[in-house]
Length: 294
Image 1 (cartoon, one colour):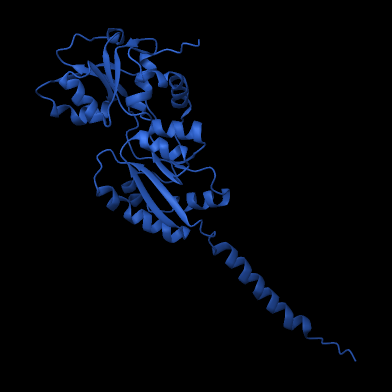
Image 2 (tube, rainbow, N blue to C red; image 1 turned 90 degrees about the horizontal axis):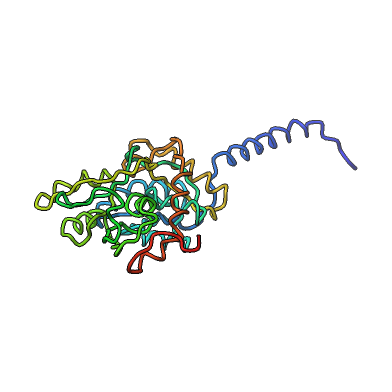
């Protein structure tokens, strides 16, 4: 015999209401499942161990919030960094401008935060103070030192400005300071660095003084933090949220600015695309800096 329970509604309603509250709260506070590993790429020109300490707090914070194992992978220059981008080895990249333009246009990385840095970064071409070089056209038939593939001020912008010239040779220096050393020693008649790098190292070349003879008129955008586009979209957003909640002072110690506007990379990407077709010719002697197919 079926017996009606008039209290069933009163008994069951609080139970299901409580279950609903639990599910809602749990959904709001739960974290995405761990992807297991997040590789962070960063360029460390000087090669010192200080960068490990610099990123220690950030690694710990990001690992705790994302439940992932965080690996910091410093590289010595942009050339090595491009190899890692091409293999999609990095989940996050703290990318200087030239590398960022490549990562965005060629490897579909997504910018999420601007890096701390100069907002008026400029590319300059330098020569010795006693050199007869005065204009870009004076470099016709001469040897020029550039930075690594991927550098905005050491590689892409100078090649963009030298487009159309034929040089005797292009030397590829591992660091901006090396570019200046080679110019000071006479190994190259001119070299390309950023204005900030020139001001930083110039006092070290008192025996063979250096001067700027050309300044690119365009300002280079700040670098950016990039995230790999192949990471699942919800996890991308969660990582972005976690990084935006990292205390601002600590984030700037690592090198990025939470909740700031992403810089415009349209011009920088156009420079990279213009230079790319002539990159293979840099190993030739003489070096013809123009596209022979046009």
